[in-house]
Image (cartoon, rainbow, N blue to C red):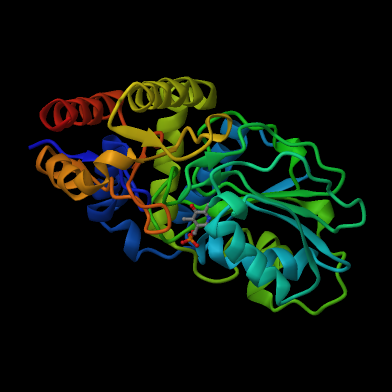
Length: 356
Ligand SMILES: *Cc1c(COP(=O)(O)O)cnc(C)c1O
């Protein structure tokens, strides 16, 4: 049976990317060796790193003055690296979910943090809009897409201080004006690759302003000086990220990604909104194009386990909601085809016809 992969992360990758990775694991570029068993400092792997960085620059139209890093540690390592590198006076954070809270927790270990807005009062079902960013903050941190709660900041915000964005789960889902950000970072495993590598796009002139002595592995400037090879990089994940970025380019770039993603999300949200059994959990103007969270309406609550089992029997994978929201979550990242969304809607409608 065909599987439809709605996993939140690690998540679906384009099939041609998986096939190219499989081939490179067996024999990289016809050199008779695996991409996993060659020196990261040799010309064969250096070409992979260089091309991956060049693709980031091209696809995101990254302006001069920015550096691209591919590092171990995922998004979570950056929760700590960001305050280490930027926090001198105080930092401003927007609290929009579990990942934002984790970022705040790490920053507080380094210096004063002001939470300028929060949606904790309604279980993170919306994006706060009326808040002020203090002009004396060193930076303002946001989570653009809240993977667990299914909410998203869909525009590039204006900030009087460097804007730092965790884009783990909506990176490359739409064109972004990089010039509005000081740092864009995330783990690759939601939308641009496998687990094991994180990306950081950093405007160089915001670095070097703190007084503390930064441990080498946490210092963005050290990683920049060493071209992401201060230590051995995650070679295989970097290879797969490179192939994923090529796939994005071949598919039509970020304008096309956004068009496809919006169409998929509209189809699924319409089905949820017109259903008399299911209901969305996020407020409409805050809904994510990447992670669609929904539950059973109150009178059908006891059917959630049945639906999950029914959907699984029809090939739906990874649709159980996170325990902090309950219900269901369909992650509909770049690589998920519209047919899979269609298939999920069919399963929902079939279940509703049987049980309602
Ligand atoms: C998954 C996720 C993370 C955690 O990423 P790691 O690479 O596991 O550290 C952080 N932020 C967001 C928004 C996520 O979706």
